Length: 509
Ligand SMILES: *Cc1c(COP(=O)(O)O)cnc(C)c1O
Image (cartoon, rainbow, N blue to C red; front, side):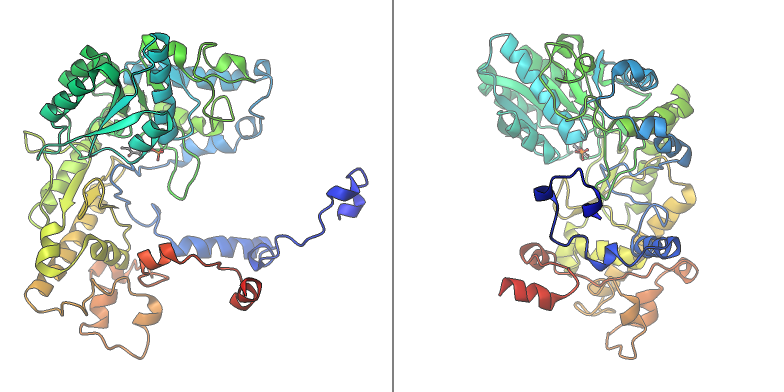
């Protein structure tokens, strides 16, 4: 084919083969392609199967009506550097969204450039760095980060050249105020910022948030708020009003852009007036940020702008009352789950009133020491029930963090809770000796259909207990395509999954 394109220079023509993996060559009819995609889908446990209670990830409904505009050519086809005067529609979308995010967060400045939460953190900290530079305080390099923070926080601080100092948490999951005060004072001459997540990753509303922000400000530092948990705040409280100077907003969490599987996200940042002049800018599209801005954090001036239409649709359709209700229901759902599960699994952190925020952490550590069953065994057993595991061992090792969001019905939440209760009953059977300590449905989970239907079944429990531990599975069974893998071995021993291992061996030997 290349030969037909006579305008291509001869020396640039490709001579090697490419795309010769069967996956690129087996599905050339629509029927085949459709079946291939369906096959991949069937291997997966996604939101179209059951709730995904991944704490901190906010796996809420991605409504079809929110998705549709992404498919419109007016949104999907313009080049990021199209002349701005031809992009009035996009401009309106940006303006609306910025105004709405301003009113939701209580901040005055918004940049739509960062492509993810982590990139927002980086951009926000760069803004803070610029602020200190402007004040001729380039020595301010210390960034205080509570031990409960998401791993992206210290990574971002490191990337902007700050020195990370870790602050302890107390037994209720709050930032340890005394430790914070001690470290902030100790580093006051060089204090650049505190990064604080509100509500915290421990699933509680940090009661001292305002005191915390005042403390940092009095010592000359700025407060960066990790806004990934905004789904517990929208319509209820505005970060711009209780202390922080800048925060990021995960549009792919709180504002319905689909994520998981590495899809594009959006992590705009919002800030107070005094930081606005340092927000991201762009060398090609000059008017996407202030001329005095920190520079660009993305190749495109407004990041992954086409998917902003999803968040626009969500906010527009919800309205301010709807958004507030969503936050309330998200918090209600998390508390309902915490209440339902508390007799099976201890809830690690609660606020003073005994409530959690929009997520809760169940503690598996005692179960582990009593029975040898780990959070990973529970995660794998959940697959047999057709459920994706909650967030594992973060922010606390040996626990699971559950975030239902407002999108789940009471029926589905009840089904999820009864599944975890059922798994707890199985664990009890291990403790009382009814199940073997090693050969039990938890340790061997997940069970593949090949194993379950094999003529050979040597386990010390019944096939039916393995495959259909709950009644609902009789009519809605998920068949795990693979059994348990050795995670550590897998991480350390990468190999190519190309068609023929012989071919692969030939090339390496
Ligand atoms: C998800 C998350 C982040 C990072 O956001 P990404 O969009 O994944 O980069 C940071 N902090 C917290 C608390 C999060 O939950």
